[in-house]
Image (cartoon, rainbow over all chains, first blue to last red; front, side):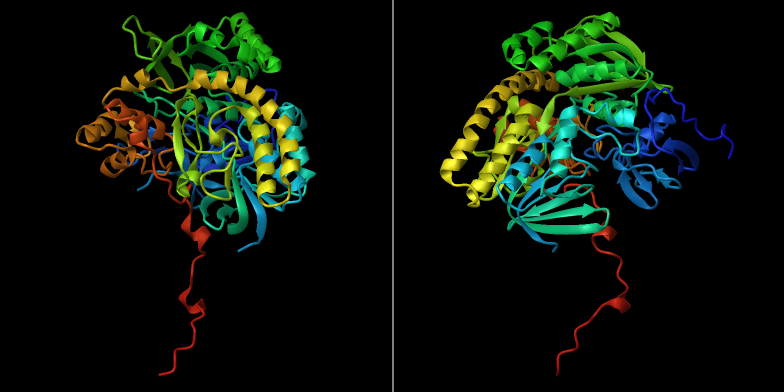
Length: 103
Length: 474
């Protein structure tokens, strides 16, 4: 996959003077996302311009990370088949992640 | 079962770590459990281990020392473990990287800290709207900005902390929207000045905002937010001293992100589940466990310390944690009366000092009932189940007298967050309809505290592998 097809890790979300971990790649909803070890899935997705992580159960409205500390469950995604809050899940190379919408 | 200790401390923030250390120093066997990868809690959250040395050095030195002392102690630590249940005996159940574990102990200290309260407004559920506490996590532990241009709103000390954090990380601020007036900030100046280091930091922060030319709108609040492409169109208006909207010209901002918070509430999962007594204390963040002077709940062997006992701030939490650890040592016979009194007297004096500052901050974070009364009908209050203010107030008009009845009738608070995000607001909405806040009550504690993947609790079973007992003889 060429660099232009995947999200650029040089996002305005990432403070510039921070030494991050090793480059990793994971897939969210079919799209390859570049991130750095130590980042949470929620933060890495935000940096890639992805803030909508699921739809709410009743109104099917877009939702994303809200409390960032694992309480609100708004950022739940399905990571390698398991429902996990994206804010408490660290990125790993090769992860396959889907939106957390309950079918 | 994976072993019994004298004490289990749930929560690895300043209160939990100090409690564990104090009890361990008196010879108790102590286990400390936290869902984060390292100790520090939210206030001293450790940077990810994979990030470079320069970022590690930015961590608050108080948190670094806390982690060093814990590592050097005899306390058995279990990080990355999420506690999902507590039962009499005491038994604590947690889920960690290697699956489900369960421990027993003679005593438990709940040091589970605080969670953020946000007063709902139309659009607060949009992606890009986050809590102030969430923004501090992005900034401090991820080195990330909520957006290129952010609007920071709400009340209390986190407002300034987030605004400054964004500027220091190279971000831009559209404005800071403060529910409080400038006079509110100055009202408790003597108490604030009792912690000179923190008081001076606050003054320096205000100077940084002024120099950066960031508009600060006092006595203002968010009216609404709506999506505008990838950005948010946020409407802001004036409020009175009670938090009620004041008619006038609203202002609009187009920003990448909105971070907003209305103070903290105590995390009381364990004491609510165990059915300990609670009392309502609006200054301390709402419903808090009822404690005696030695941090004992109404259940023998169950103690609470830190913001989970009522909001008083990190400095007070650390001292209270130490006091709670000593109380357990005393109650389990590892510290006689005389030694106990000698140890706690100086700590109680410093706790009083730390509490003065914490109380001044807590006052700035108190929920303003008129702001809740102004929530419009169609505004979602319970994010998990998409329940609106209108549905909640209809239930109350039809006779629901407490939050648990509202929950049963509307599903409000029944979702995966267990009512943590909406609980305090729902209690206030029920109260606003003529019931006392005490009568409105609090959501009954339930397990699991966090949603659990069931197959991690019990691995998939193949029927052929089941070891069946031999059939009984006929």
